Amino acid sequence: MRLMQKSFSFLLIACVIILTTSSLVAQEEATEEPATIPNIVGLNVPFATSMLNQLGITIGEQTLIEWNTSLGVEPNRITQQSISAGTPVTAGLQMDIVIAHPFNMEIIFDDNDLTLLNQTGGAVDLAGLVFTAIDARIPATFSGVEWTSEVDSLSPERCVQIWSIGGIGQAKSVEGCQASGSIPWLSRINDDAHFWIDDNGATGFSLIQDGIYRGDCAIIPNTTNVQQCEIYTAPIGVDGVAEDVTAYVYFRYNDEQLWVINRSDDRWMPSSQVDIVDAINLGDSNLFAEDAIIGNVSLLAPHQCVLYTNIGATEPVTTPDSCDLIAIASLDPDDVFWLAGFEITSRIRGENLACVTPQSEGDTLCLLPR
Image 1 (cartoon, one colour):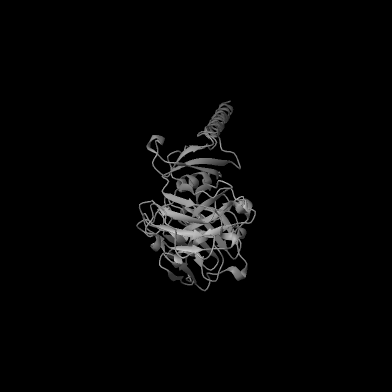
Image 2 (cartoon, rainbow, N blue to C red; image 1 turned 120 degrees about the vertical axis):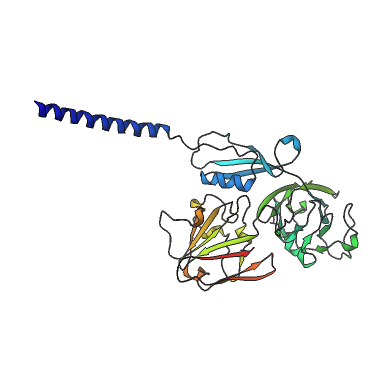
């Protein structure tokens, strides 16, 4: 009888332990709340993008408005988000945002010419600017790098011009610019460079700076009158590049893998502008499986990274430096450029700079001015 009582007591204790453990598990499962949309108002766009991408959310339409103090945020910050904070995260979400910028680049144009007037208070790197016609029948694009044959950067209160006709003796006088005789200008008679003219059906043009969307300018159709547009561009910072992009590109590699990592806290890293000599374009999205990308491989947000490998990648992938992996490119043997060392053409230094061959043990680190 005593044996039976002991056995019964043991079973009772065991049942209590099992029930208690099950209860704890149930409580833990009940307290696990689904991920929710964060509040990104007041954040800068690179940092907010990194935060959203970690949740599987991509940035959608960006509306740019002119900043003023009544908006309650600092310049170059997000003022609105299309999905309310606290909304549960579901797969495939896309967040539209409104960004407030101080408009500081004036664009003056008519059917013959276009002038850029720098009102940023600092110099602007012309090589980073790309203009593209919107809705044009024939695609029309112009890169500011063409101006750099005359001048590398646009100083405050200075201008540059482009003309759509030939036979011009000197730049046109424009209010607010320096003397017309000292305005760098060029003429392009091919339609594929006339991004600001509505003869091609264009309704406007967009400005991209260092891979970053800066906004659109509308074109009033069927007019020869002078038109104006104010838009935002980031001036060159103390490290020689636009204020919201990294000055350096960070490589970490071995015989089998190469990582490109944005180690900044609040800046973009435009990988599409990292010019590797005689090799692939790092920002080429065709190198990656499109459905696997949560982010932008040509414009890495803070602490994001991409992996290039010659052996394929198996899950899970261990990332170095605790970076957020957004895409993997499995390269053909002919595209594996780092095994014998490689060079990049540095826009900051204006020369080629080299990374050495992978070391026999561990990873090789290479940090170069972009």
